[in-house]
Structure formats: structure tokens, C-alpha cells
Length: 85
Image (tube, rainbow, N blue to C red; front, side, top):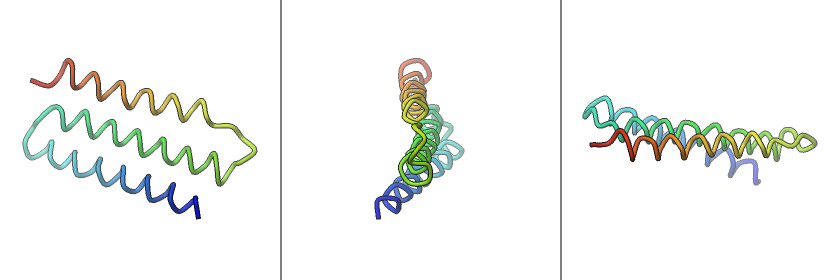
């Protein structure tokens, strides 16, 4: 049951990523681009969570999950601070 929740979270983040990319293509707003990159990496983070907890419970992927989440948030902050005008 928890595996379904992890996959639904990944699917939701992927849908957000796609919708933000579509918005960026239509408006050209840079913040939408950086937000879509953040959600794309959060999708990867959720897939790592699914693999860590469900597929490979004997392997610890916590470090990789945290690194992906850190890069995702750092990209969003970079876009918000330096690229949005």
C-alpha cells in the first residue's frame, strides 16, 4: 500500500513538472523553468524513495535521496534569487 503512495507522489511531481514546462514555453517566465527543474528532480527523489523502501529494502539510498532533494531545492532557490525578474 505504501508503494502506491510513493508512486502517486512521483506521478504528481512529474505532472507538476510537465505543466510548469508548458507554462514556461507559452510565457517564457524563467521562474517556471526553474520550478519545473525542481519538480523534475523531486520526481527522481520520489522514485529513489520507492526503490529504497519497496524494491531494495536491504540497500540504503538515503544519501542519494537527500542529495537529489538538496539539488532540487538549490535549483529552485537559484532561479528565485538570480533568474527571476
